[in-house]
Amino acid sequence: MCLPLLTEQLRNEISCLTAVKAFATIAESPLKIDLLSVLEQVVTELTTFLPKMLQGFFAELVQSANTSFKTLLESLISTTRSAVAPGGPVSKQAFYSIAQCVAVLCLADGDAECSSTVAMLATTLRTSNGTDVTQLLSFLCLGEIGRRKDVSAHANIEVLVIGSFQSPFEEITAKASYTLGNIAVRNLAQYLPFILNQIDC
Image (cartoon, rainbow, N blue to C red; front, side):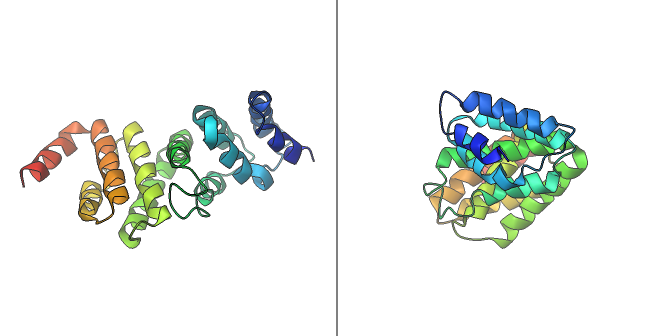
């Protein structure tokens, strides 16, 4: 199979764009070629310098019949699991790129998957602690989804996010602030009074 060879081309600045287009063509192919064997490596390579292209790639993948939403979401999230922190093997920019891809993936697959992903991220935030990589990524994913879609149907999500403002870890408070700002943008009437009230407290 040529997939590993194609993946190698992503590392080359000259051939990268062609390789991404080839992967997009394969994803849409009626042959239903399984991309799972190289998906994590593709994500890792593209998050380095082509975040917008990566978002388009995942939007096309989820709309094809070849790969399920759940598989794609897991592939994106697992990319960060080897990292100890955002400054580790997966760069800080890569975390933002992955979160943007998660948001694009959710919106491309419809309201039901988007809602279930927000609920999953909220559960992760309630149960994780410290500077856990999963917690940091969950904040970013929630913020990117919230920037694109109103999440106010998820009761008290703003309370959950602002609770992390008290964290002793600067990285956590920064990500929580980023998330709250993003979700507020989509529904100012809901969230702005809450934010102003917190400032006055």
